[in-house]
Image (cartoon, rainbow, N blue to C red):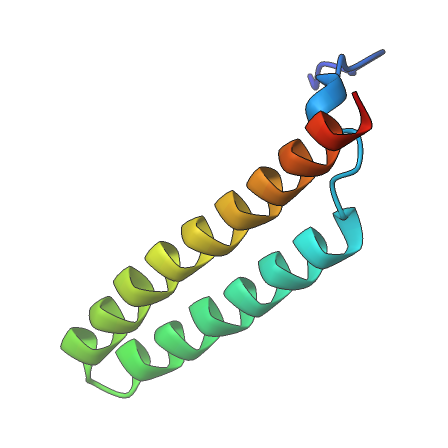
Length: 78
């Protein structure tokens, strides 16, 4: 059974978060995961693991940058 979220409180600093860019970054990450699965199925697990580790760090950095920029814009509004 799934729990339904009725409301989410968003800090005012990140109200301006660009959600479409965030979704695009996640879609890119999913494509990279699919590529890693293909590499692994072709018998190259080392390359697959390296790709996943590199892309996870990259995704974290990009999402962090989006959140930081939104926080910066939120502070400028005040």
